[in-house]
Length: 311
Image (cartoon, rainbow, N blue to C red; front, side, top):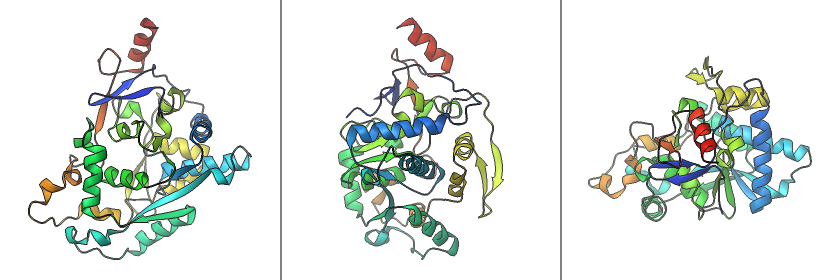
């Protein structure tokens, strides 16, 4: 199934198929309207879906959009389930420092996340199972060296589902990513896998954060962690105030142990995906976006000029 009408996986990044466009900075409902529209279109296209839920602002915003669609009688509860992926490290303890029970603050986050989810999907993969998934699904992709360890494991979880998995990780913010995308989006664009990334569905929702009046707010979370309230968070909260509850979410227990290795000799060469990131806390790099003439995208105006000349 084609996952996007505006993006294709291409070279070391992405090809843009339609011109980018700015969104009216005063239209605070834009992102919610188009997110809800896309959710409906995805379910109409593929049938029942699993909505990936981590408890952060992205997935919480999506959950509330779905909730509103149910209340508006545009969706029924039997066409989706909200699922939290819970990693069990019992089959991988030999490569980690001692795995401690969650702290009180970590347990608070876990309880909060699980209270929203319809289902908690727990898996205890072995390193060999993850390596087999890496070799079969990820290694051959052009962006594999930048994929990121968390994204390999999340994709492994989603690959075990019976339904398509609707994902809203990290809304596209071109102006602050220098017109690039996180490299793991390339995997979600592959037609044969079961991930569907909401914000690559079409150009309207894809450009939801292309606003010129960008501001970043500093704040302190309930956990006293210095954080930035990015444009996407501000847009979420303006539309659905409850998404502010997703701000305290961190790399929840036990996912955080992916940064606490005690690898045996030869392990680095055997399990490459766990180390394919450049000091980015396990997340994937930003990959460039190209026009059909192979030139890198550098501005919204450049894309509009190109597609106007070639229409």
